[in-house]
Amino acid sequence: MDKITKDLLEQVAGLHEIPVGAYNIRKDGQLLSRNVSANIDIVTKTDKPGIDIIIKDNTQKESVHIPVIIAQSGLKESVYNDFFIGENCDVTIIAGCGIHNGGKETSEHSGIHSFDIGKNSKVKYVEKHYGTGEGTGERIMNPETNILLREGAYMEMDTVQIEGVDSTKRLTKAKLLDNASLVIKEKIMTHDKQLAQTDFTVDLDGENSSANLISRSVAKNESKQVFKSEINGNNACHGHSECDAIIMDKACVEAIPALTANSVDAALIHEAAIGKIAGEQLIKLMTLGLTEEEAEKEIVNGFLK
Image 1 (cartoon, one colour):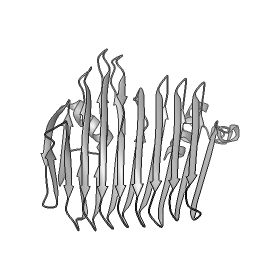
Image 2 (cartoon, one colour):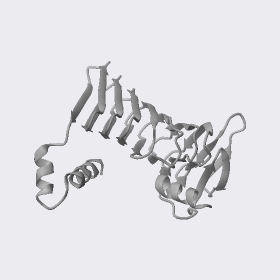
Image 3 (tube, helix red, strand yellow):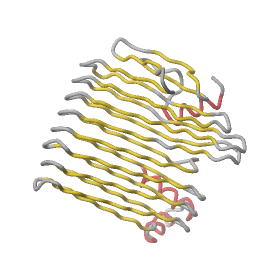
């Protein structure tokens, strides 16, 4: 692999070398490398770009990496990845997309991921987005995630985008059955004139189902962020949505929550806070010898940690 590919893989998937176990690495619209395991199979789709990831019942403490790399300026693609996770599994899925654009044309990746998570299974899903390159062409990423959590299933989804993405529309839809639980943790930082839009829709259909949606973001310069969350409580359930944002310079942040209780036993909460860095925080760090710029950076890093 060349240096650009290695650097992008390290940023989006934490890979310093080819991983152990199941993986599928895609670069510039083509398969770069793949490996399967006894319990995890990866099959190329025949009707559209993408793969099926099939995880057998009772698979425990295994992981699969499916990063996407784009280093070709002007490449635009949509990729459809479907995950079929059996019952009683405990697995980690590490995805993510890195775009290096050294040219003048727009590079764009739309990743449409669908999850069918079997009964009593536990899934941790990590997705990082990162853009780099000295070119003037835009770097656009539009991830879409569709989730079905069957009885007793649990999913934790960590998404991070902190550098180099000019525009992103992040769409997540989830349906939870009895005793299923979903936790989503989102971290975003935008700068210059970047745009980031997040849209969560969660249907708590099952009895004793629960969802916890947490977004933390920092908007700098003239960037704009829009956070939308919709939780529909259709049974005895618990739903919580939280949006905390730091706004700087001439940026704009919108938080648009929606809660709908269709059951008297649905307990739904939303919290939102948008504000600038407090002056006393800056002063405290500056008295320790930091410049104002260094103090701001420390506060932002701590907020997004």
